Each structure stands twice: as C-alpha cells, then as structure tokens.
Length: 445
Ligand code: FEO
Image: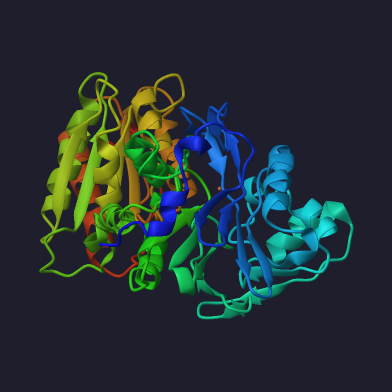
C-alpha cells in the first residue's frame, strides 16, 4: 500500500472554501481546476447530488510547465485565475489533453490563444475529435499524438503516456509523472463529488459517488477498464489525480482494487461457449395478462433446457421491479422477452427493463422475443427492434400467437426455446429463420 508523502501535509483545510487558490497536490504540481457545486445532473443522465469538479493540473519542470486538461467553458475564468498563480503563460511548454469531452476542453481554445508556443499533446485516437472540437475557432492549430510508453520531458521531469481508450470516450489516455509517481487519470477513478477540501482523506464520504460514477460511466467499457488496469497496476503510485472529484492520495491503490473488483464480475461470461462451462446462461423475462404468455414462457424454457450445457432462468416481471435484474443480464449470454401486446405495444415493465440496460454492454449477446396477442401483436417485433438497437444478435425470429396456446403451439414454443439454445451453443452463423406468426387458422385441420 502507498501512503501520503510528507509533501501532502502542505495542503490544509484552508482550501475548504473555494477561495480561488491553486492547490499544491505534490511538489511542483498544482490543481488548477474548478468547483461546480450547483450541478445536479451531468450529461443529462447522471445525478450529481453535490455537484462536481473539473480537475486540471499544472506540472512545473526545470524546462517549463505542462498543463494537463482544462475545464468546462463556463469555468474558464477560475482555471486561468489559478493557472496564472503558478505559471506565466509563456512558461507553458506543453498542454496535455487526457480526454477531449467539453467538460475538460472548454477552456482549451482560449488557452491556445494565450499560450501559442505550447505543444498540444493528445492520444493517437484523438485527432479527428480535436479537429471537430476546434473547428468553430477557425484558427490553425498543431498537435502531436502519443501512445503508451511515449514520454515528454520538462527538464528534470518526464510525462509518460498510457493509451487507455474508451474511459470514457475513444480518445482517452492517462498521463504519469514518473518522478513523483502521480497518475493523471482523466475520467477514470473520478467521480462527481464536489468538496473543496479536495483530497480523499479530507472530503466527506464519497464511496457512493465513486461507485455510481463507475456504474454509469465506466461499466459499459469494463473490458477497456481491465485493459487499462493492466497498464496502471504495475506503476508505483503515490497519488491519483483524476479529472473529476477528490484527488486520491491516501491509499490510492484501494481505488485500483475497487475498479478491479467492479470490472471483473461476470468476466467469465465473455468466454466462448464450452460444453463443460457451467455459466452459459439464458434468462427469460415475461409478463402475462391472462396466463397465455406465461405458458409460452414455460414452454420456451423447457425447449431451451432440452439442449445440454445451459442454465435457463425464468422471471416474471409483474410488479415492475427491474433494477435487481441488471447484474444478471450483464452476466447472461442470452435474453428472451415475453410480452403480450396491449394497445399496440409491449407492456411497460418490459420497456422499463430494456431502458435500464444502457449502462451495460449487451453487444453480441443473443436476444429473442415472444408473446401472446389478441388483435395485432406488435409487441414482439418492437422488442426485437430494441434488442438490435442494443447491439444484440437476434438469430431466431420472434414467435407470437393469438390468445391461448394450443398443445401444438406449445410444441412450437419448445422448438423456439431449443433454437435459441442452439444459437447459443452452436456457431454464430446459425441460420436465421423467418418471422413466424401462428394464427388459429394455421392450426385448423
Ligand atoms: Fe469528464 Fe468524459 O468527461
């Protein structure tokens, strides 16, 4: 475990109120960001119960200053006020952008105007995004791209780069100040938690904010989180300086461990099917008005269970509680949804469940839909469209039938379940069947 270095003792509770001061976080390294305590939602979807911070940093070396990230445009004055306390603008040699989202690049155009001599450093995935970001300025700009292992010297200090894409945009990277073992991590290890005491050993309890941020920002990219951890975990670390929320100087490795823990759940489900693998899982969710879709669901389950090597689970969504299922869904290999059609639509708990899945990756999982209907039966194709929109594969076309299923129709439901199971256990190129609609007329002798 790493522990705070003696130099941290210089940061005191005098920084509790936002007095506009730059705050030294390590020798020659200053926080020059901004506090946004009034923010109550971020990117329109995240609750920010006590606001957020936009963290930017200035690193002084014997050959000049590096600025790492900027702030949201509305807070540019705070940023420049702090920057100019610790550096003259013509001292700035390097501007590093760990991430180009506007909450970190809002002050960039003005910084480029004020410090035109600075080299602009971005990740190898960032150029197109940078051009799009700066095109309204209509001013020429130059930049350099870096990759994992590249370094930039500031005289007696070096900044080393780690390519960590999708944390949380494709362009993201981390920057490591080797001499002082400081990781400027960008969004990763951050959280929306505004407390001007700034350091993790001084702010209020932010564990909820940390986990909530992970769940909504990083969880969809957990494969990339694991890749990034492989780069970060071997580094000696005295301090993690993220782009939002508290600076992690007390036991920084516990936050790596928390990310490792959060990102490793369900890891085994990403593995290809293996007949001996106990975790190939199909979950069937359904609702039923008069029992017909329930009978279909039970028959679909029976059909799927006839294929060896599957674990099949059946859940009735009546009652509308969907949150407990999100983890199960993330870990499943295939999902089937059974819904009656009511007023030309699937029923609300199905949509509630499907709309709660944006925070997890469903890409490549198998999806399927079925349901009983009275007149028109739109629910099944509507659910299938949504599953495709979530990047799921729908290799077995939906099954819908009118009102109460007959014995023959239940055989068809069992065959439907078996086809889903075979699509899970066989090659991904299993033939796609045409959509089937079973009407009473089709079954009449
Ligand atoms: Fe804090 Fe992805 O921006």
